[in-house]
Length: 261
Length: 344
Image 1 (cartoon, helix red, strand yellow):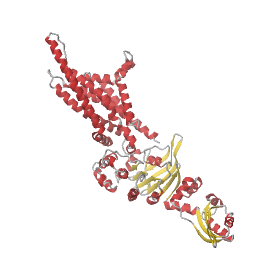
Image 2: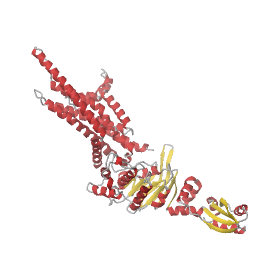
Image 3: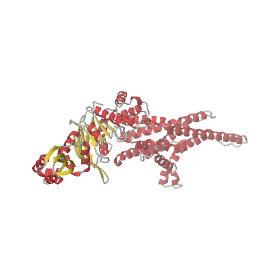
Image 4: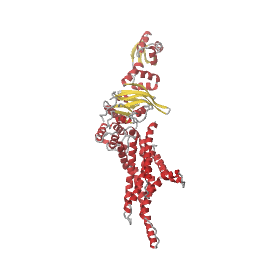
């Protein structure tokens, strides 16, 4: 696993020195901050209205903190959907284009070590992007009366990290299929979008196929986490996608050597 | 890493046996066999598209061969890829560099994936930086380096784990003459402790740096030998230059027409008082073989035939064939290639 560590460190250093990564981070933080303030203002306005109605005897139970958390986490999920393809687009495509695959393929390091190192690096980079929103999110929640349970919010972030991990494993695979970063990004985006809303294909059917489609819909899974519904099958699904993505990546890189001209 | 033992007791660092590689219906290399002895510099010479890069990639374990075996440092590249990868340094045609890393960070990274222990890495990186004259560029981003420096970083990358076998695919391509000389000197300084195989389509490179040469053409081995051996073989058999005195050109042609193994390449007047001619002759390899005489036997026969016909012989000599001529002969004529292969 020494090789995986080497790849991990190289990739992570690459993210922290790459202008693209900084642009992505700026966009992510900027939009997240903008929407957070936006959601916060709306929630505050609404709760003032609710208070007003309550004075006239119209009781309307309203949990401002939960609504804030859920809306913000859903927003972060959607934002990630757009930005994650950019994280993984160059992982393999750039190595292929620059010919550095030849270095990796002739070094005493396995394809699995390379894939693991790359995946872990991009995942860790994404998690660092999540830290600032997490901090101001928790700070705002800490002023809520009555006090809220942070564990629910934290669970949402764990769900987001797992979601991103599985999306990035798929992105890694797509990136290994091409030597164009643009194609990798667009194809990854298409793939995630499909998995995001695949439950739409299920409609109102009650067959096992429809149930499966609903189950693998990333949006469905993620909203469960956001609402605090923790199920082991959801964890298993995300982990399976990660394993599957990495496995497919290793196979695809392996087969590259046989196609080379 | 120097202490790595090789698995077999033979002195050959690279053994290639009946190697073939096909892509669909296209045959890139066909039935290539050769050996490189430990400490030797072997040149792999051929025109573009002859199969050099394919062969290098198979030796480096990057491409699987369709048929045949290749053993590097005693390990089969197909059966024991990790053992081979640890014992080779490989510079592909395009140096595999990460443009956004500094030279030093890049070499540290390569050392790490080549399994140089953490304690040895700084020493090894310093060593190759010194050896490839990269001291000034240590902290420069690779993206900002000139082509020549990039090539040197590529070489440093191939040396950083001190591998017993070094595979270089066109190491001097795209460099200016001064850089070419530097790279060649560097390669020469590596011989002895390392076994080196380098591919090139530049002839002087081979005669200047290599101990032995494999000439490859259309995916097949055309000749193997030291540059001197190859030169000798061709000049032994091929050409003779004469200066003769005869009144008429036809007399000279008549005297030689009974020698089927000899062809007149050119016949030019040198002067008219007395009338002298410069004649260039070429032996027909197949006819020499048919007559069963030794390979140089046709030269005294030419002399005898001329004297018997009453023609004065002023000079007879064999011009030095350059490696360039050999290469052209081998890669453009099918017939002579076979004869040389047999001699090699």
